[in-house]
Image (cartoon, rainbow, N blue to C red; front, side, top):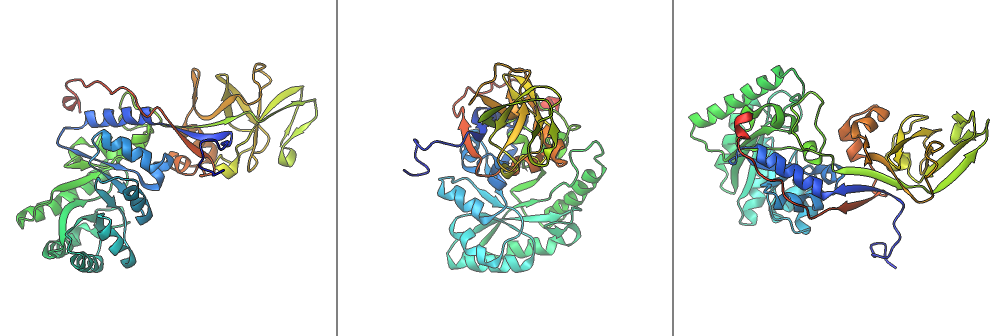
Length: 394
């Protein structure tokens, strides 16, 4: 029997991806934007752990113009999965990757002259004109050509007949904080480049700067296209940025109770004996641990069982963790527990897990291991009904 067989018994721990919530998030974001502004959905790193192909299929149906990715493998995976929309490869490309970019009709981000020359040559060999986006470094000091050195590189792209200057872009390093001064400086630098292009009558179809934070808090920087990432998946980039009503988390992490133990006073739990029962306790073992991406904590955190919080006790093991269900007497074997997400009227958020991990929400979403199978649900849901006056409120 094959592992991908419908009859293969799946492990009783999984990430659950609610495609209905993803669809509604996309609709709310699309509705919040002026109609002329395109949406590039960022689906790098398996769509922040949500499954890039499933996410891309829903996003195409909801009007996404294209997708932002980080690696060649990610882009080829979407092409082989039937996604024909534009795929923008962010970052820098090795020379060996360029032929693959050309043959798979990928849009390439270029940052320096060598890549421009080699990509143009490879595109000419295949008789194609490859769309490129020039990345402008306006202060983040990561990828891109400096804003005060960008014009010569852009002119090199324009001079190559086998390349098409489709876009110019930059990336905000701090768009989701209350202080927007550096983001405004970056935008001013980017606008200086755009002004220089206008003076030389160089036309650019797509000018884009905004990640999720920029989309939410810098509407004057939306330009021709926005590039939301984490917001698509129902997580706001910070707690101080604008809140878009109706946005909901798409991912939950769940497991089933695999064992129940009864402790007598003085008995210990787990590696290192980090928990000692003071009274009689009833504990549930969940078959999920730090080998799946759960934070390796001791006596911190909780799971939701029957809508109640069951405190985590002892140390997290690679494949198991223990929770105290003494106050949830109805809990039984193989019932569902929620480690991240909603159950009943309570919720354990991705920010709660990030605090346990002493990290950020992005890290939590992308670091659930693949042995924790992804289960997609609610692929068909009702649409968000449009309303009037959205653009005027921004």
